[in-house]
Image 1 (tube, rainbow, N blue to C red):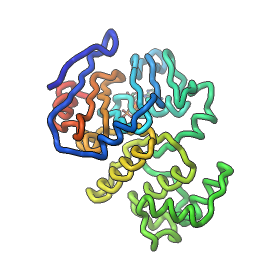
Image 2: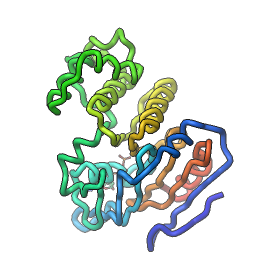
Image 3: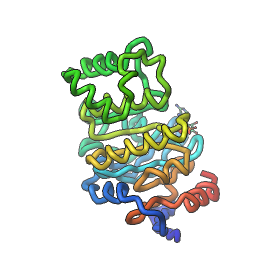
Image 4: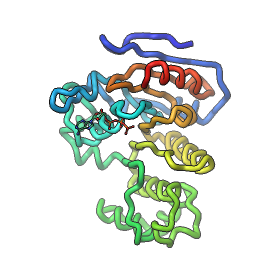
Amino acid sequence: MTTPTAINQTSPIESQRPENTSNSELNNAQTAKSEAIIEVNSLSFSIKNNAILKNLNFTVGSGEIYALLGGNGAGKSTTLKTLLGFNKPTQGSVKVAGKEVTQGLDFVRGKTAYLPESATLYPHLTARENVKYFLSLADINKTDEQINAAFNRVALQEGAWERHIQTYSKGMRQKTAIALAILREAPIFLLDEPTSGLDPVAIDEFNQLVRELALTGATILMVTHDVYGACQVANRIGLLRAGELVGEFDAPENGRIDTEQVHAAFAQRGA
Ligand SMILES: Nc1ncnc2c1ncn2[C@@H]1O[C@H](COP(=O)(O)OP(=O)(O)OP(=O)(O)O)[C@@H](O)[C@H]1O
């Protein structure tokens, strides 16, 4: 059942613990959860007196997959931009790995792998060349064997490793971007609509990869308008509407968040 409780003076929040199918990986990921790595405290952000984000509060722990779910214009990208330091909070604070983002931009970006909706890789370079180039920018040395291991870990097929990225599908580009994040040893992942445009098999593979990252202690925040996709992979969903966090849903023990309940809340509230 959905139980409203207060998250702040203006926004009700819901938590939901339905009976559901078992999913030991998600449960393990929850077990691995420890301290808050992403902390959004009373965050408000306005542009020219237009309130875009209104008193947001949420945390994401190590080993947790948090999906910030909302419709078009809800404020998802604005929240991500604030976490990446491109927006300065009008009020409140955003901390990543214990540091206030605005006061430790290099530190925060060094710890964070940001995957935009379309992974930014050079089309005329191969996957290996892309990875080597971006690692060199970050002054990180990895052997070919380590790069091979990362490609294998994300299940990028070996026959594609030396092919130009322009021949890749979206799913393959995302795998390459995640391989790069793994090689950078970034413990925090910010994913923007990560499964949009992927076919169902690629979505399953991507979700599996995200769960595996969480199992190794990564902190994962994804923004999406895909209710089903969020329920498939997240330990917790925050429902964002018009810049306000209006509900939060936790996965039950050994289970997944119930799609119907989240969908109903999303639709009811016009999220
Ligand atoms: N630079 C800006 N100037 C004015 N308004 C802005 C600016 N950036 C964002 N907004 C407004 O803030 C609101 C939230 O935008 P945002 O891009 O964060 O939404 P979103 O949830 O990511 O939407 P979508 O799913 O459509 O990408 C929207 O109403 C948008 O018009």
